[in-house]
Amino acid sequence: MIFSNPLAGATLVFLLAAETGAAAVPLQERAGAGCGIVRDFKGDTHTGKTIESGGLQRVYDVYLPPNYDENMPTPLIISYHGANGNSAKQRALDRFDDHTWNPDHIVVWPNGYNGFWEGPTYAPPGVSDKKFTSDLIAHLRTAFCIDDARIYAAGKSNGGGFTGTLACSPDHGANFAAVAACAGAFYTDVVQDPNNSCHPSRSPFPILEFHGSVDGTIPYLPTKNGSGGPLPKIPDWLSTWGQRNGCAANYKPTVSQLNGDKTVQKTLYTCNGTNVVTGYLIDGMDHSWPSTTRNSDQDSHGDKPVSINASPMILDFFRGIKKP
Ligand SMILES: *[C@@H]1O[C@H](CO)[C@@H](O)[C@H](O)[C@H]1NC(C)=O
Ligand SMILES: *[C@@H]1O[C@H](CO)[C@@H](O)[C@H](O)[C@H]1NC(C)=O
Ligand SMILES: *[C@@H]1O[C@H](CO)[C@@H](O)[C@H](O)[C@H]1NC(C)=O
Image 1 (cartoon, rainbow, N blue to C red):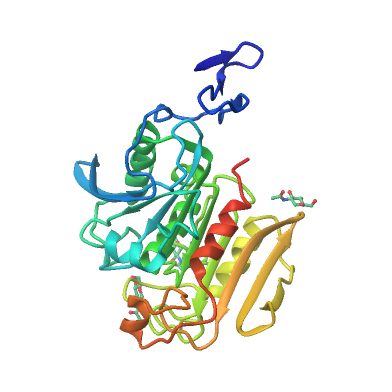
Image 2: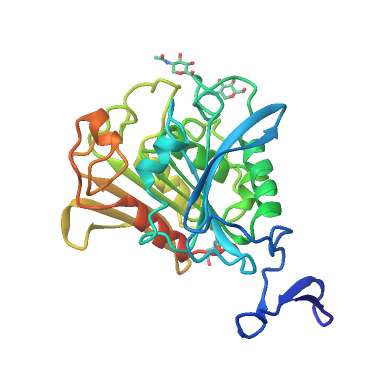
């Protein structure tokens, strides 16, 4: 049963979970029309779903966590594949559909148009993936019970760079509480370029990035253009996000070994009492999604499994952040 709270006006809606005997649960102020629709694939992934955006048919896969409750606003992660990739490949890499890691977030894996996301020169011209992302979120809000304060973006390489593009967008980034990238290709945010422009919708806008120290595709410290144009040095990109997020220009991040692990260096920017930027540098890793078990990235790049799994760390990072 849904009713308006006369004290707070029509926008604040309460839900009475009569069937479960639970107390009245305050719904998110802007919880969408998708709440209350019963779904038959909890714990499972539906593939090949489509929406129209910008005159194009766009395709995505969607996972519902096993404990999905159609009456409970649920966090959402949109996970973007790397260049020339697709949703199936990204699902196999991030394993955000692993019930142990992720019992609590809806995950959507969209497909880039012809396999790419906007930003690098190799992406198909005239396709707005920012607009597609906003259209996708608007659509998902009508289909599932999504918590608007807990929408996140994650991605690999071109897809990781695209999460940075979203974070820099005043309009299309405003949907997101935080973003996380693995081997991010930040073609749209070359912070060394004096003409670079990034207009985050809010500050702080928490950022997480994982990078291999010997990434040969998107180097940690690039010395020449990537295949899609100029790229930033990752430490400069992290530091610039620190400043965007309230750190002083002369702020020095805390650099440490992750839990004493010599192979993972953690760089943490804590400003105004909040962890606003986190970077992990994985020693000896090439262009891979960090994983303790073999994945397709490691096969492509001759990498070995590493000591951390990025995905549960990304999930933990997201769990700590809500959009204000
Ligand atoms: C920055 O933009 C100005 C004006 O468009 C242009 O003259 C200048 O060459 C640009 N600088 C760089 C480094 O691209
Ligand atoms: C690097 O990329 C920029 C932008 O695409 C281009 O203008 C420039 O010529 C490229 N530089 C080299 C050395 O290829
Ligand atoms: C962080 O704190 C400084 C100093 O108190 C303040 O000027 C700045 O606006 C704060 N930044 C954010 C993002 O809250």
